[in-house]
Image 1 (tube, helix red, strand yellow):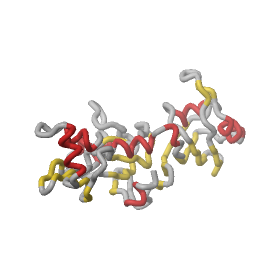
Image 2 (cartoon, one colour; image 1 turned 90 degrees about the vertical axis):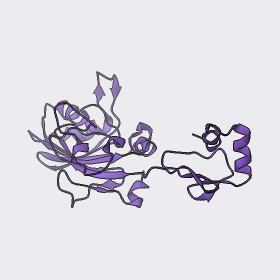
Image 3 (cartoon, helix red, strand yellow; image 1 turned 30 degrees about the vertical axis):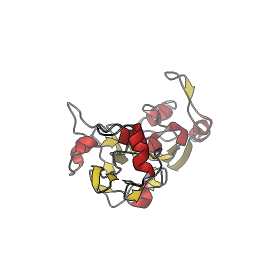
Image 4 (cartoon, helix red, strand yellow; image 1 turned 60 degrees about the horizontal axis):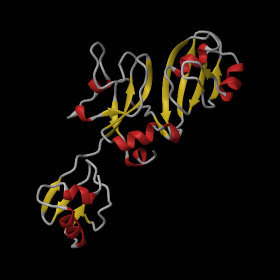
Length: 230
């Protein structure tokens, strides 16, 4: 919420008090004096009045996980182990997923407690490219390249998929770049050619590549430049 509202919501202050505190330079936001009541206060923000801490602020957390096959992309599940079960971190209940992968899909998964950041990662209008390695049961029809680039009609959603780039690497292996995330999209696209997916692995989202040093089930914190790439 706005800083002036944050202050006026405290029992001891009203709106006039909040304006006076800001004008007097008595309020610091993330360690810096703040005079602008329109500044946003998030759960990660530290707010101080004189020498008093009004909100200490949570630490923002960002993780890259190499999701293994057979682990569900959810914060909890009655039957399967979840990706949060793979994290040796405190307060995992504060974390959520920035995008998902199917149960039998492996690869890059992002986990955070920063809702604004995860919305930037997953917002359809941002069109962040997602790259997958695809292995199929039958040889890949070269016609897939042109058809995927033109877009496929999905009857259930009554829409045409956004243009996708397909690079055939071997008779049964390809690299596919999507700019959206429809339900079982890759399987449905190849299903249009009656070709079954036998392995699906996400290697990147946006400019962020899966760290090759991470084995399935391993994770690490993101670097500052990786966080800022979205």
